[in-house]
Length: 472
Image 1 (cartoon, rainbow, N blue to C red):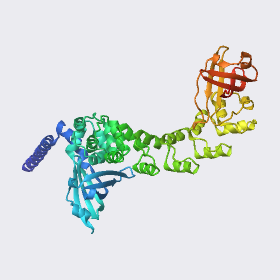
Image 2 (tube, helix red, strand yellow):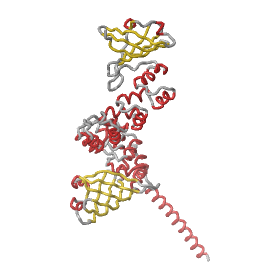
Image 3 (cartoon, rainbow, N blue to C red):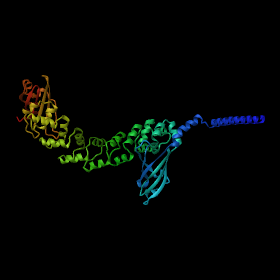
Image 4 (cartoon, rainbow, N blue to C red):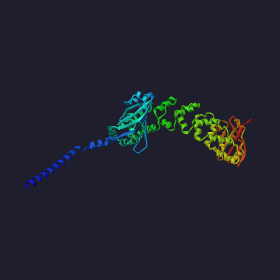
């Protein structure tokens, strides 16, 4: 009995000791495998790279005789929708794909790779006659992830690793841009750059053309609106000077395509100015507008006239309705002036409703521009026309000072020229007539060897009429 108790006690102590040894071993092993702070940071930096694989579909078409490939990669983000990126890649950048496979007439099954600093694209699919499609898998590079996070671009990378990979940015983005003379992008700007698939190569292409970009925001805007090196070269080949970067953005925003240029030139316009091209597009002076004007009798207005017409709202409808009111084939410059000075269709109709019909355009301008009372229209002679008559407007400021405008109508703009005339040159015009409640007047305008006989009407210091050359 005693021996049995002793044996039992020994077994219990052995179990206790074995348990303690196991606990010590476990504690030792746990201590040995616990990561150091540096190791934990490294794991955090590279964790995303171990998890980051992107899958999607690819479409590629050979360009430049098969030396370059126009590429579209499409993926489906976790939140839904489709994310498609377009870029060009040289055939020499791909591993495992030959020019012969791409251009083969029969369908060729292919597997190839595109290595970028951010990771590797593995492609699988087929090519036939320069066009191919299939599936791709992108695997991120853990060292790239670590460097990017250390440089402060972790959040941008998390949002848009796909864009970093396509853009072919190296890990030290700041150094790459500084080397090109460009400011260091902020994390937010880096995210925008990759959304637009902008690469260091894009910047280098601009520099080859003589541009010296400095601003990241400007580069983002250029890329966003499709201002490519190919577009600049095409503009210069078409005879335009090299646009500034600001002009380049405006050209793309407003859709100034080479096709638009060719259409205008087919109508006989020699378009050479970048600013003029931008203005035409901004204001909608297109080929259809030119053709409509021609149908109304206005053959090929100047480019400046087209722009002014669009700015001030001289539309084909305005011209047609003006014709219905009796004003046919009004010169273009006068049409523009009508819109500038408020000689509107409603204004003309209002005058007609008051009994003033068929008022000469020159007198309509007088009413609108110089605030001539409408009642003057009943008292003013028309002159003999033919460019020999001179129309006048006089406004007295107080009883001593006056302003005199003399117009020779009949030019294309219908406005002639104006000038200020001293009081002493208006012979035979009395103060009583000038400040009357409405009186006809006759006087002589004498200016050097020139002498004009003038008639008209005055009321309250304002007068108007016509003059003709004196025959005595």
